[in-house]
Image 1: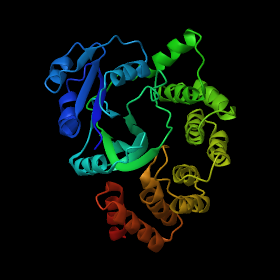
Image 2 (image 1 turned 135 degrees about the vertical axis):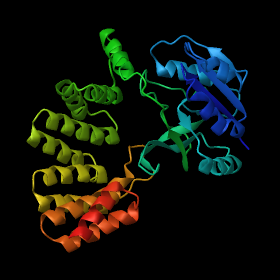
Image 3 (image 1 turned 180 degrees about the vertical axis):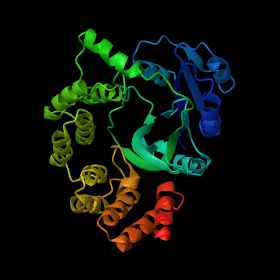
Image 4 (image 1 turned 90 degrees about the horizontal axis):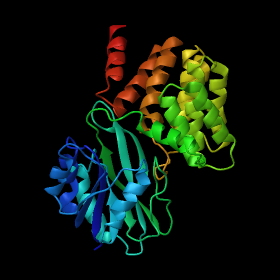
Amino acid sequence: MPTISLCMIVKNEEKHLARCLDSVAELVEEIVVVDTGSTDRTVEIASRYTARVYSYPWKDDFSDARNESFSRASMDYCMWMDADDVLEETEKDKFLELKQSLSPDTDIVMMKYNTSFDEAGKPSFSYFRERWIRNCTKYRWIGAVHEVIPPSGKVIYSDIAVSHKKMGVGDPDRNLKIYQKMIAEGKPLEARHQYYYGRELYYHGQYEEAVSVLERFLLSAEGWVENKIEACSVCADCYLRLGQEQAALNALLRSMSFDLPRAELCCEIGKFFLEHGNFHNAIYWYEMALNAPKKERSEGFNLPDCHDFVPFLQLCVCYDRLGDRQKAKEYNEKAGVCKPYSQSYLYNKRYFESL
């Protein structure tokens, strides 16, 4: 059975760290914690779980810090988690089963990363990340921000999920400042980081600059298709906020030049037509979302609700606006099968009962 080193980089995580380590400590053979300058009780808390706690200067480079943590590991595989991540009880037996059955020639294990949750606590936004990585110098992090280990060798996918559950708000400007520092120092941004830099500008309300960066990324021959599709979505929202509605629709439709229609983008196009009172067009795109293939094993972002709950709910609205109350009610009931606790479904249910 393979051995695992849990490798973490932390700074001022006294609110989160014990919860994270409690969730996984018994499942791994070693815990390595690299502290990058905490001024709270983070080091004290980490020391309760492991003697392998190291201080390391922060250099505005996440890959640099993560590679330091990996260099301290001594087990077969390195596993990374952030301090505000947790391995839920439902995942622990699967975690142990995978350890027992893992083929020794496996290089990387991709696991789900749940980063957003609905009102019942069920994942509403997830994607796959490299989670167990063979401990050798071949596999090291790259990228100062949104760091990644490029997958190679034998890669397997697991349905085991790590959940990101941050308490409170971090530094919203950190990533943008790192990118701006890189640009000021004359460091070129390769395609992947052009995409993430554009997103950071978007998050900060700098819509014109975000569009400029993302349009250059979309025109580049480089870049991952999933990032291209997401960039179309971000550009569309930027254009809407800038009052350029036709450009927004064009950006959404452009996403289909990169691959088959994604349910998420179909829902966005449906929403565009719904908000413009074009209910028949909206229905077409929401039905497209229902029929879009699921890409369960893609590293791209996944909003599972866009394959069923969201289009069902919006088709209910469309048919109600068209005066077909029976069909509207049927779609609301379908949405209720997906999420019987949803306030939107329950509101609609009361509405139809009142008619």
